[in-house]
Length: 302
Image (cartoon, rainbow, N blue to C red; front, top):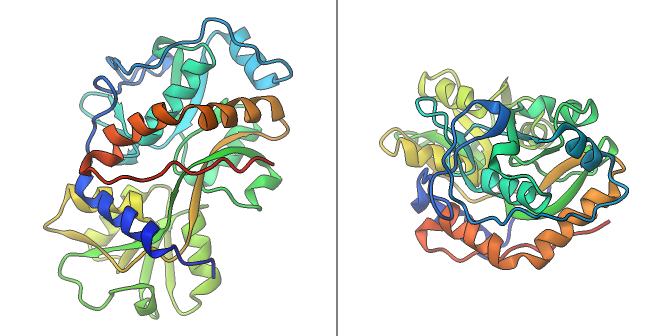
């Protein structure tokens, strides 16, 4: 099984519980924009680059020719990548990271099209050119690197468990034998359960929100994915749901990119390396609303 998170890392993730599903972001609301038709209105202070020197990137060349950037995201993860069904506004840490990258590439919010991509379809969406890049709790793994490339990591968390508030049978991953555990098809957490918890029954859906509904309906005993995601769900319904135990893996979130686009990968890695103040501002106004201080992870270039 993958290495357990350090005690410090686990404490940092658990502290995110206090953030709830805050939609705050630097400067105001984080609406979708461009061709997505999801609404707009963000005043986030990302300076849109007027002159971008990025030679040798076919992905960037396609963006320039098209006149906009298409970004794959999640829309059912409070605090990370969430879309309000009533207003169409998108909020969360991942959404802001995606917008920051776009601005650095010369695309303002009116030139961004967001596309919600289920976990199981992320690689195919990148490989087929349906999106230019993906920002949505996308764990960097060697298996995925066979099909796509990653910039980052830009955030580190770990796998956790969400159960009903009155559940006393499951307090950690050690209690999963004979239980039904749900996660998203194609996700790292569901693969971990299958490989390392052979006595646990697995249930899969396209989205984590479907797993949460199955949990509330009594169809499954627990939902598993990254703790940062689960805490957002628990914060939405604190009287019905809770996160138990400590994170039991290390998950490093990266920006998914077309395989072989080394120029774009280096560009985004340099943005993360040199943009610590902006990264911190994004974190503080989204996941960091609790006041918890989490250090930006170092880029792992390859």
